[in-house]
Amino acid sequence: GRLLLHHEAVLLLRAASAVQGLDLGGLLDRFDGCRSCLRTRPSFPPVVERAAAISVLMSEAHLRDKVEDREGLRYGVWARLFRSVFSDARSHLAQAGLDGEDLLARLAEEQGGIERGAAPASLASAPTARAFGRAAELLSVEDRHRPVMAQLGGDTGFAAYWLDAVRDQAADARNGRYNPFARTSAPSRDAVEAEVTARLDRLARWTGDIWARDTARASAQACDPLPVGGI
Figure 1 (cartoon, helix red, strand yellow):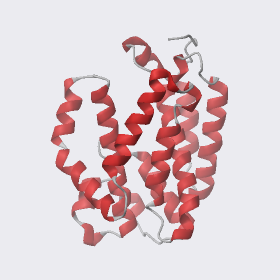
Figure 2 (cartoon, rainbow, N blue to C red):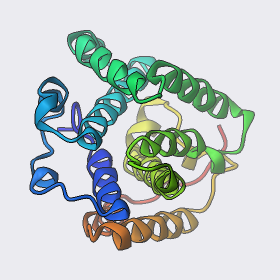
Figure 3 (cartoon, one colour):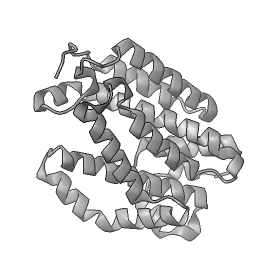
Figure 4 (cartoon, one colour):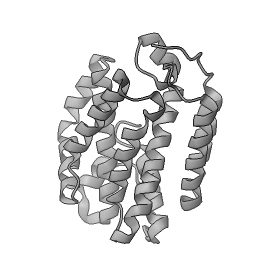
């Protein structure tokens, strides 16, 4: 499900609709075919097309990360299989003023620097939050909405990163992969959960989408914290 659809992109589209008072009719409930959104453009408002392209770009970043971590041949196969879809998404975003390739390259470079120890683990979510914030700005119909959309995008990226880190703790430990909670500079689990919940609550207030709060709580309850140790 996350290969071509990121729930975070749906949340950003809901935020864009709420912040700007957009009437998208039933499109919010039908936003489940990102490839079709990109290839049947006359049927969708520009903000929906951009949200679809952002969702595909997030999927490309996710696959690149998996390939970089050498998590299996299947991720490389999927990356090649959807190459044309990823290219379509980047082209569409370029028309809106976002260089998707540059965004992904910067995200990988900044994240790699943090994982190599260039910054404390407490800042590990910063590259993802910035990338989400920049992408969310594209959902602004008017320039005056860009600051709040960038903030809500940053909140979404922050939450997405830390929820993944919580969920992946055990698997990362088994496979020797980076996880911010396993570093000596890691923030406390309680502090992260409180900040994630606060940011998702802010999103929920804008969107009325209870998915945000429930996701945070369910993820926190489903994962037992690992002992913090140096790497």
